[in-house]
Length: 217
Ligand code: C5P
Image (cartoon, rainbow, N blue to C red):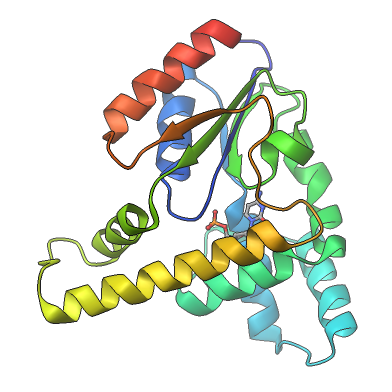
C-alpha cells in the first residue's frame, strides 16, 4: 500500500482509536491519533494558565499547538475530564486547527497512514481513498468509556450507573460542541462508510473495515 491514507472519523468514544490502531497494524501503516494533538495543546494551555480573554487564549493556544513535541503527546494526563473539555475548546479555534494542519498532512506523506479524528475525511484528507465514520449509541459509548476507566468494575451498582450517566452526558455535550463549531465540525464525509459499533465487537468492525479497504484501496 504505497502512501495509502485511511481516514477514521466519528464522535467521542465510538471506538475510532482502537479501530485505527488495529487497521494500521494489519496494513503496516503508521497511525496518528489526531485527538492527542488537541488534547496536548489544551493540557499545555491549562498548565500555562488559560487566558480569560478569548483572543489571547486562541493566540496562545495556536503557539502551543505549533510547538508540540513528542513529550507533549506522550503525557499520561491527556484523558481527564478537564482535558476532554479543553481539547474541544481549543479545537474550535481556527488558528489552532491551522497550526496543526501541516503536521497531520506530512505525517502521511512518505508511507501513507491511518489517522483518526473528527475532520480527517472532510478537511485534512478530503481525497483519501478510504474513509470510515465510526458511530455507536451514546449509551454504548458511555458504557465502554466507563469500563476503560474502571477496568473490572461492576457496571450495575448505583454508583456505577450514576457515573455512566455522567459520562454519557459529557460525551453528548462534547459531540454537540464538536458538531456545532464553524471550523471543521464533526461530520461524516459524503463518501465515508458508516460503521456502527453499538452491536458489533471490535473484531467484526475490523473485518468490515478491512473489506472496505480491499474494495477501495
Ligand atoms: O478523539 P478525542 O476524543 O481524543 O479528541 C479530543 C477532542 O479533540 C475532540 O472532542 C475534538 O474537539 C478535537 N478533535 C478535533 N479534530 C480531530 C480530532 C480531535 O477537533 N481531528
